[in-house]
Amino acid sequence: MDNGKMYNIFLLIITVIVVGFGFYLFNNKVNTKQSSVIISEKEAKNLVKEIVENDQTKIEINGIEKEGVFYKVDATINKQKVSFLITEDGKQIAQSDNVLSIEKIKEDKKKAEENQKPVKSDKPKVELFVMSYCPFGTMMEKGILPVLDKLGDKIDYDLDFVNYAMHGKKEVEENTREYCIGKEYKDKQNSYLKCFLDDKDKALVGKDGDRREISKKCMKENNIDVSKIDSCVKKADNEFKITKNLNNKKGTYPKYDINNDLNEKYEVAGSPTLVINGKKVEVSRDSNSILKAICARFNNPPEECKEDISSKTPAPGFGYNESQNTQTSNASCGS
Image 1 (cartoon, helix red, strand yellow):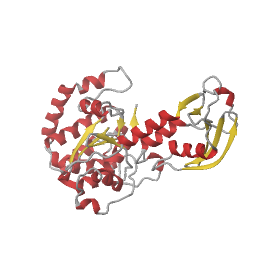
Image 2 (cartoon, helix red, strand yellow):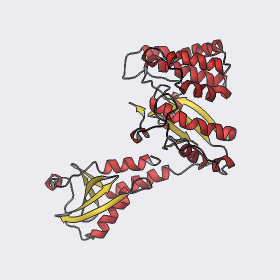
Image 3 (spheres, helix red, strand yellow):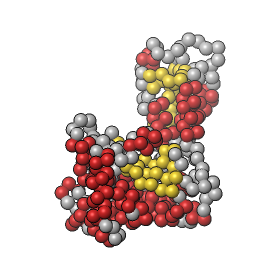
Image 4 (spheres, one colour):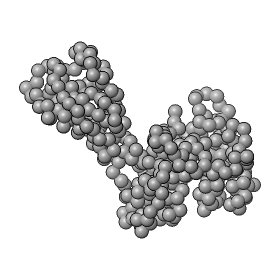
């Protein structure tokens, strides 16, 4: 869903107003005062297309009929049949027992479109926020790693962490290891992660999916000094109160504050969250889509942006299989 926010606006506009809905429910909320301007059926259909349709969401109008002070517009979106109730003056749309201003919807859609316009730079700053055991975070990591190999130092990339942990002690520990590997061995972080995400050594996976033995193996393979990482982890634990927050039973999930300032700056809500040049970007998790999203934010895209790269969507979780479920392509770990 390259333009997920647009689709979310659609979802807010209409859940599904089924045929035969009781129009009397709106009598106390819809302004049914006779307007001097009554739009035509064609204008009503065009209005529905304008407020719903975008690059990723196409609508097919199936029919329209007049019902009192409403136009009922029947349509199909993503193979789902829906009906819209629009007041005859074209100013309001009814959803369940709510009434929304069409003018306000247009304004919100315009703002969302403006927000999705790429901010460009000579060397894009790319930040990926994950939880190390979130299956959808690992999905995005597997998609972005080939992109990082291709673009190299032409971008400024950081792997960051969501400011709460949903997958227990093993996730908190791995987050901090990866943070320290990035701090002490920046040039080896991606290579380590490729190894950690692989699922070929399933015998090393511990109870409840703990992959600490795989982490040790991957550090050894990449000539990463374990004692140096352990020292960094201990220092980070004291600085960011990691264990203290983990043991704090208040709240749904423990806080994880290593990148809390960036989480707050970008309003990060879950894993994964991709930020390019200071703006959140919604993109499919295959390498080709990620490459295009980053390349669109160069002032002058490098030659690598013209090269082919895989468009296969990685499966959620660990291992390098291809996803067979399109429903997971936009899923995330978030409270």
